[in-house]
Length: 455
Image (cartoon, rainbow, N blue to C red; front, top):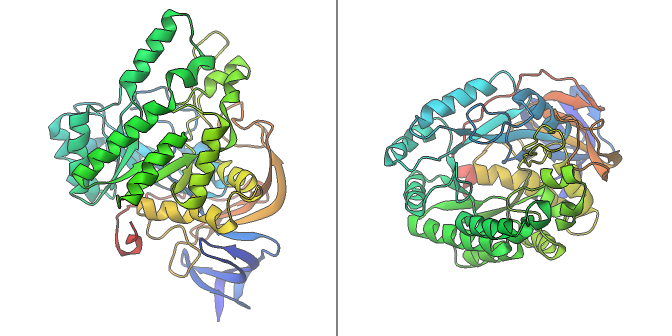
C-alpha cells in the first residue's frame, strides 16, 4: 500500500516510549506507523526525533480588547514564530469588557484570528466581570467549543472577588469545564509594594521581595479550596515557587483534580535576572516573579515526578520602550520552549525524552481537551515535528521570528532544534524557512470527551 506522504526512519518519541519507524500521512491525519512504508512523497528523518506537534496552552497575541498593554506579536507573526519552534497548536484568550457579552467577545476574537494563523489555535475565555448575569452565558461559550475559563486573583483590572470566583467555578464545573487560575494575593502584594515604596525601594531589585512565595502559595491554597467546594477541575498557571508546588502536590494526594503549569522562564532563569541591565530587568518583572535557584529546582523536580503537568510559555512580548519610559514586562518564548526544555531538561538529566514530549505535547492535549492532538498515532491530526537533537542555535533577534527587536533568551545556545514542522500534513517550516500557507490554521473546538477520560 502506498500513502500520500511518508516520513521514514525517524526515531519516534512518544510520552511512553521511543522507537524507529515510518509515519504515513494522508487526509490531514496520521494513517499508519510501521516499517518499510511507501509514499508518493517520502522524507528521510534518519538521525532525527519525530515528535507530536507541541502545544502551548498559554499565549497572548495582540488583542484590542485587552485591559493591559497590547502585545507585540500579531496572530500572523506569533503563529509563524510558533511554527519555527515546533508548535502546531496555541491557545490564546478572549476577554470581554465588564458588562459586555462573553459570546460576542469570543466571536470577535475568532474573527480576528481566522485566516491569519499559520497553525491551529483555540481560546480560553477570561472572565473579569463579577456580575452574575455573565455566568448565564457560560453554557453558550461551551457550545462554541471553549470549555476553559481563566480567572484572576491578581491585577486590579482583572481580579474577581472570592465570592465571584466561587460562583464562576461552580458554573464551569456544572459543564465539566476547566477553571484556569492566576493565583496571587493581590491585596498583600499591594500592601508590601506601598511599604517599600515609602522607603524608596522600588524597581526590579525589589520585585521578588514584594511578591514573596507566600503570596502565591496562599492564593493557590485558596483557589484549590474553592475548586473542591465547587467540584471544579482546576489548572494553576505559571507556578513559580516550591511552596506552590507543595500545595498542588498535597491537593493531588487528596484526590483533587488539579493540574500545575510551569513556564520556561522560571526553568531557565533565576532572580539574578533582576540584577541585569535596566531594560532587561524591567522586561522580566513578570508576575509571579522569577525566583531563586531553590524554587527553580523545585519546579524541575515537580515536572519530573508529576506534581506539575505541563510546560507553557506565557508568551507575551512587548515592544521596547525608550529609556526612561515604563517598560511593560513580557516574555517572548513561543519559539524557544521545545528547545530550551530539551537543553535544560533532557540534556541535563532532569527529564527523560518521553517526559519532555509528555510535558510539551501530549499532556497539554489532555488537559485542554484537544482530542485529536498531542500524539503520533493513527487517527490523530498529522501535526508532526522533526527535531534535530544535535542542531545548535544561539538565540538572538536575528535567529528568532517574533515581532520584537530583542530575544528574551538572548545569547543562550541550545542543543536540539526543530528542522521541519508539519501541521495537519502540510509542511510549514523546513530547513529554516517558512514555506507553508500563512493563514492555514483553524480554530479547534475543544471538549472533554472519551479520549480525555484521564482528566
